[in-house]
Amino acid sequence: MGLSICALGSGSKGNSALIEGERTKILVDAGLSARTLKERLEYAYVSPGEIEGIVITHAHIDHTGGLPVWVKRYKTPVYVHYKTAPVISELLGGYTNIVEIDDNDFFIGELTVSPVTVSHDVPCIGCSVYSAGRKISVLTDLGILPERTAQNISDSDIVLLEANHDVDMLLANPRYPAQLKRRILSNRGHLSNADCAEAAVRCARGGVRQLILGHLSEQNNAPSLAYESVARRLEEEGFAPGREVFVAVAVQSVPTGIFRIS
Ligand SMILES: [Zn+2]
Ligand SMILES: [Zn+2]
Image (cartoon, rainbow, N blue to C red; front, top):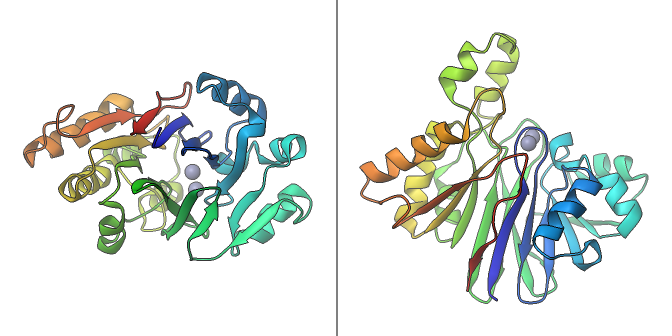
């Protein structure tokens, strides 16, 4: 079976990914409603009771929206960094189901989870999940990807990486006030398609062969734009998209397929 990932939904309105090892299934974030999460897990033949832990990257609603109802129903342990734990405990009405983590690796079943600190406008982590010599990394909600972090994830088998916006679309969007545009474009905001494309090249050089682009803005991006930005840069650097590096785009409305490393 190895290790697999399925983005159950990804975008500004809600994020959650299922990661499955030999025996252990976890979620990274629970930003879709509990009902939608349950429905989408059914696509992967997983029932809520099988989820052994939910890793929360940060407190924004698009990562936690479904958490209170889910935890009330299924009592799943919630793994959250100590800097974010107070906000999540408020959301859940106490610490009962919270497992506080720090910057060190932690374990859920046979999975090793390694937190990756990222730069966002609230305390935020990404994570790498290891099992049986395989590695999947999930990195969304980051303003910049420092060299060290890029190196850290570049030996993953699969990376789910943020491609939040097309810079021109964002700048031209009349519905977004200047301050919000500045926040998104800042080092504590979100990765653009161009940023993601550079990161994708670094990942490809490191040996990553499957990339899932995620957390696309509905207003300031389109799956085709994100894909083309990344595919073009990979091609320029000699990595044939679809052959040497498989690139998929996760969206809000439906889950991706299940990406598996056997
Ligand atoms: Zn987000
Ligand atoms: Zn966020």
